Length: 117
Image (cartoon, rainbow, N blue to C red; front, side, top):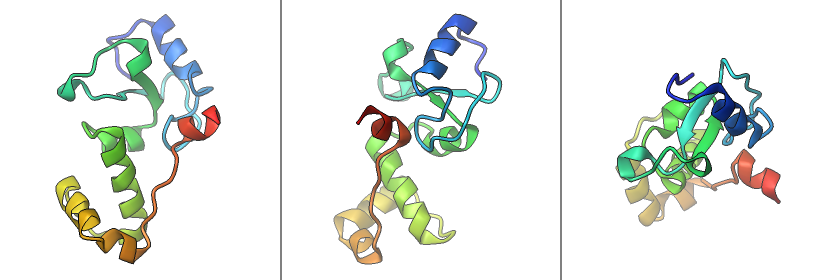
């Protein structure tokens, strides 16, 4: 877990999703939690608590610097693509051309979105 945040801030971040990954919903501890920048710092995001989400290592690794909709599209594509490797730009191109719809790729709500309903 990132060492740059005080433990009190880490707890507040973890509590946002009841110690679950904001994206896949798997259980987390303060030791296993990664802190994700919802709006990536590389794209102008900040370290304010509103922009920080509790995240598992797998989701954090996949999301990287993707914005939420590109991450959503990548996750949906990977579920159908059965091991095929494509860049985010390639996936977005295939989506624009209707290929993802033809493959039956459909996006889903992330855990934090389902909890808010």
